[in-house]
Image (tube, rainbow, N blue to C red; front, top):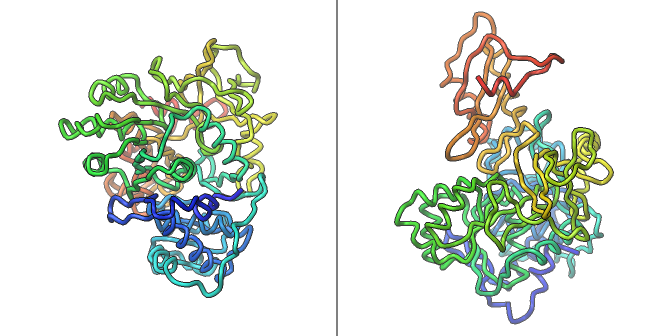
Length: 496
């Protein structure tokens, strides 16, 4: 089992077939070219000390070079640790520290990095990936990809929590194989004529866990965009004859707002939405405008992406994720506050069990134990299963802020705000937003005798946080509401 195997051991007739196209640069790559690049870059990494079990942090924008780097790490038996490309340079020290990585591949200039990062790991610039993958390596890479065991860690994706810094979700080839079996059973058929457009970040899993392997398995073509921009998406759909697109609710809202420019969407075979709850009204508007059904699914990176898919029938209403899968593949249940299963139709916490569930959180057994009970992964999401076996997502138990499918931890934002010399204490909650679903709102108590404007504090936060983590508004308060236990009452705060 190895992620890189389909790239380097493809059928001979695919040698000259186009596999990946970069929409922004116009570059295209065949199976043969990708195979050569992966082997060459694997040789370069091996010469730099990357070997089985070594962790390599990938802080890269969507690109073919990013896929080559990921596949090369996998080829050698290393562990690819994906970090959001928008993470600020000064925050990379956390990821380097928690992974103990052998190497950091980043788009950031060395002078922008914390000196502690430079002393802790070897640095390789994103701009070097292309040239190194085209040059003969100092020594040949292994003749065959590393034979991962099914339960051997192979990649890590980071997810946020409300009471901690980002946690690394450890996944294995066995997890991925289980996810693939679920896809093959429930996903809409894809063939060699399918053209997929990927603008969701590779670091969030869907692109690298699902779309890249899907293209490889089916012989279809993946068109890669660095980031989402509605006009550029529509131009790509029309120019390249895109048949499948994938996004979050706000992506589809923005595409519909493009008016007549969105007429090209009528040529799609499929549009798929995940990562955030999809309102039924948006689904209706999308189908009326494009003639294409807006499909939906449910899963988390802890479940190795999707577990439930609604791809072959219309939605029954907001939150309808589709039918629960065959229990021989993966199990879905709803738990009450005491972690006991509840009857059909009763709302509780969604839990998932099966071979696609993560190995655990990287170097954090306590966090792992908090979300696992009798083999069930407790998602933190609220929902119910109907008598007919459909999963409905109704809300969220965790305090994570969901911005167009991107999860933001209040803890991370509060840590930055609290570091300002004028701030005594901060509290961050979600505020409703018509476009993104939720945005970040902060409440701040100032130190006695200190002052700072909302604008200056937002600018301060923007110097250390990813743009979607930065508060859209900051409200100054004298005190925070507390629960009977003396804890911050975020529900009351959100209502202010």
